[in-house]
Each structure stands twice: as structure tokens, then as C-alpha cells.
Amino acid sequence: MSDKPAVLIMQRHLAPLSGFLESRYAVHRFWEGPPVEVARAVRALVVAGEFALDKRLIEGLPQLGLIACFTSGYDGIDVAWARGRGLEVTHAPGVNHEDVADHALGLILGARREIVSGDSALRAGGWTPESKTITRSMKGQKLGVVGLGMIGKALAARAEALGMQIAWWGPNPKPDAAWPRAASLVELARDSDVLAVCVKADEENRGQISREVIEALGPAGLLVNVARGQVVDEDALIAALKDGRLGGAALDVFVEEPTPAARWADVPNTVLTPHTAGATTESVQAMLMLLMQNLEAFFADQPVKTPVR
Image (tube, rainbow, N blue to C red; front, side, top):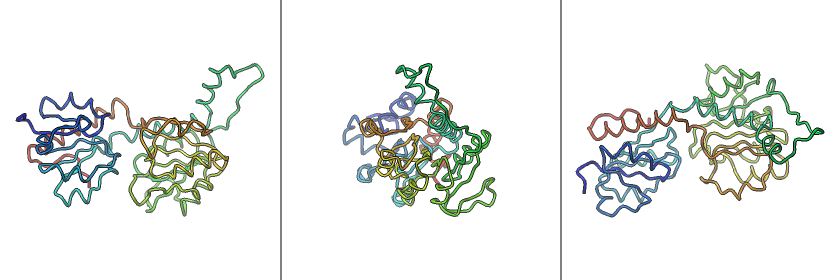
């Protein structure tokens, strides 16, 4: 066993972090099945916060003191339960909301101006002298933002620059908001051309974008999701797209990730990206910096830099 503090990385896509951590820590990878003696020594977990964390696993790590989320979100972690066991939970707040907003706007443009489908049509020989795709201008279209946090505000500002009309809804009023708040989520959907889901996911808003909300958005509406897949009733969404009760969907997040390609193979009017909205070089570097600082502080018995509040 190494004399270095033991750290366990939980998800495969976080494997590249090993190279940054190994000079200071004994790094182990969960998918490699570390032996029992390693589990007994692990003092910190490095996780992607959107993935559910098995409580039985945590109970089997007697020296564990820190759950360090590489990501901003931490909806896969029962924070109250972790705190009840004396565990610190950290995350990477405020580093990628601008990038997520950029991506959300890209999804809106890609779907609404038919950029993605136009690319496919051209490559398939569909551009002929007789054909011309005509789409609506973004100017004057109504954007409804679900959740006016850092991402929602950044998206609203970008969309406003395109001449879109902005409204929002969230469970709590924001007196300083620059845009009007709808009386209800259903009302927001009914009055929007585009509905963008930007909420912080938790158990209270699981399935919040329900069949009722989807049908209120309607056959000319576009649903955009850059929050978490669990916020949308995905089965209801797919059914509405297939039978024309919803005009389109542009999604970066899904209930199951990676989402099975076959699930979307026959779903029309979609633009899909593999949960990359916040994954820019700059944001990943910032998240890595916070991860390193939180680990360093924890192992030095100092206050961590970005605890989950």
C-alpha cells in the first residue's frame, strides 16, 4: 500500500483525472475493482455529480471523509445523508454556466433554423434547384426559461440579443429579475415558442416537464433541455414528438446516460448532443483547479474551497 492518501475515481469518463492526481495521491479507479484493502484506505471519492452514488458503497469505505464532485451539479448525491455521516461534499460552481448557455442557444438555432437537418439534407443530395428551406426568424419568437439561475439568466441575455421575447418561471419569485415571471409553468409553456429547461435538478422537480407541459408547448413549440434528463418525462416527450403534439426537441441531457441510440432512431424533429453543454476546455480546466484545491484543503485538514451549501 502507498503512503499517499487514497482517492477513488468513480466514473470511467473521469479517468483522465488520474494523471493530474497521481503525483500527490494513491489513485484508484472504481471500474477496475480495487481490492478490499484499498477500499478500507480510501479517504476521498471523485465523482461526476449527475450519477447516483450508491450508499452501500459509501458505507463500505470506513475512512471516507470527502465526496468531491468534479462537476457543478451534485443531484446524484444525497447531501443530507452524506452530512449525517460526517462527510464533506464539494463541487465546482460558477465555472461553466456561460458555456451551457452558449450550447443551449446553439441547440435553439440548430433546431429552429434547421441547421442540423439542412446539413443532413445537403449531404444526402436533397438540395436541388427546386428546393429551398424557409424557417422563421428568431426575432420576435418567445423564449420561456424554466429556472432563472446562472444558466437561465445567461441564456435569456443571449436570446434577447437575437430579438427574442423572454419570460421565465421558477417556484420562487425573483424581484430583481429583468424579465417577467409567468403565473405557472404550464402558462409559460403555452405562451412560448421555445421552452428552455435550465433548472437545478433535485427530487422535487423530477418529471416537472410533464405531458401537460409538453402539450401546452404544442405542435409548433420547441423543448430545449440543458438541465438534467430526469426533469423531463422522457417517455411522454418521445410520444408527443412521434404523434406531432410537440414540434421539436433539442436535448443535451437524458434520463439514462449514455442514452441508447436506438431509443431516438425513429423520433422525429430532434437535435441531440451527448451531454457536452458545459464541457469546454476552459470550464474543464477550472473544474480541475477546484477539484485539486478541495482535495488539497481536505487532506491538510483545512476548510474546503467550494463546499455544497
